[in-house]
Length: 79
Length: 175
Length: 386
Image 1 (cartoon, rainbow over the protein chains, first blue to last red):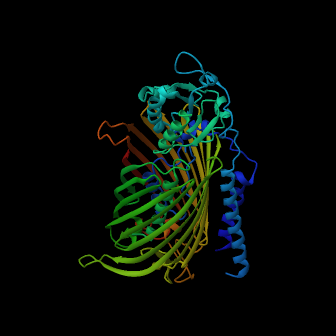
Image 2 (cartoon, each protein chain N blue to C red):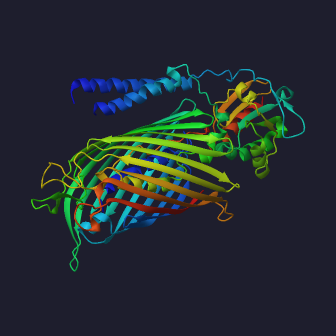
Image 3 (cartoon, rainbow over the protein chains, first blue to last red):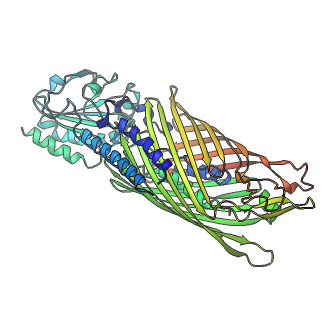
């Protein structure tokens, strides 16, 4: 494992530490019952994965750059 | 890979695991004042019927308070299930309050037109009661006994969890 | 046909991974089926075909998905026309993936196989996603490994096509992402990815051009390094507008050991209309610098250890403008289908090279225009949720 990769994980770990309730006094500032807009399908980062996968493929085949196109959902606070 | 890199990786792994453990413990021990045994905070909210409904009026009955929103999938799934529970135990001194947490009531009313329920719906448009009951997941369910004490708290809903509700209500109704 | 199939497969994985993670934080993805017809037409190339995806929860905590994808390629591109003759080819790809939910953690794994006559790619991936902080934050880590077998096809008119093995490639990819609810109306997603590749990393069909002693342009086989490490980092914001619409913006930075630096900037707007319609508009700008060893015309034969005229490694920029329309419906039959949508999207792409000339125009090397082309990308798809 190179230093760069360790660096990436090291970047996320302190962040995770900050956000994990047990390691910090921060409280979630958007309550589950305030997530109406965020739960709207138009706020989804990737509402049609088949289509976005295809378009990413179109660009990746013809361009030199690749990666960092995926994203993780915002969450509606359900369950 | 030399031994110093291995040590660095090991330390990193320990830090990640350590915080994972801290998270698990914090979640397990998260301090709520809405815990079994605590008195349920009083409130009064406008309802879908003509009158406002106040929690203190319901002392003597087993009360299930369900916090829901029309934009929340599991909440919508849970509504027909709660309706069945209400119909089954109504006669035995059980009541169910569906507290809608949306600032605008239009979407909730629209949902109830297509999926009507027979239990009272309350509208918590300024989130006062949601804050009071420390709602930390959608949906949230709090079950109170006949003396107005909190007995069971549920966060989230997955199909099949209603059997837990059934058992808990049955035991409280018998008290 | 190109040496990018392995990379295509891994992009599919990256988005399949995102697909697995998309939607609610600590909830499995919705059950759905999609049937897509895609069409690329531009630069002398036509690529069309279907993509079918089916996803279903088999238990409360396990969701499985399968995808079948086809590219039917008809190519008379500028590279083909300058060194060979137009050809047709089909690439088929199948993948399986699983998502397992335990508490607030989702574990995903999958396998993808891509096959075309001159490129075979096998890829596996694994990722873990953790929802935390009251579901405000989701952090994921993923690892992907791909093994490719690259060959060269020789189409000789009148004779049978021969396939010659050229080399293997090994790809390892590490990714980390964070998704954060910033306010009631604002979402942020941050992604970093490192890609390490070893082996035969070039297209056997691209070459290098040089001037011989008499000033005549000649071609020789290209030679690219056999290792490549690339790093990408991106950020995306999505904002809810008060009149019930959404605005999003994204930026990605890329740099690799071949010397390519690239910037990608995109904006999008989503507007629901009349209950069942949703319209989208988007724009994307991309620019990259050339690889260190790239040259449109080298001064003499073998002037460098590594030489390539592969235009994907050139300095160029492209602009994409797109529009999409979606119509949601609730079919009364069959009963088990909850809702469906019909979707159409069109993207217009303009690509302009700064250091790649269009020699198919003919004539002497002086005065040949820089190459640029436009492409139309059309998608039509139908989705069902059940």
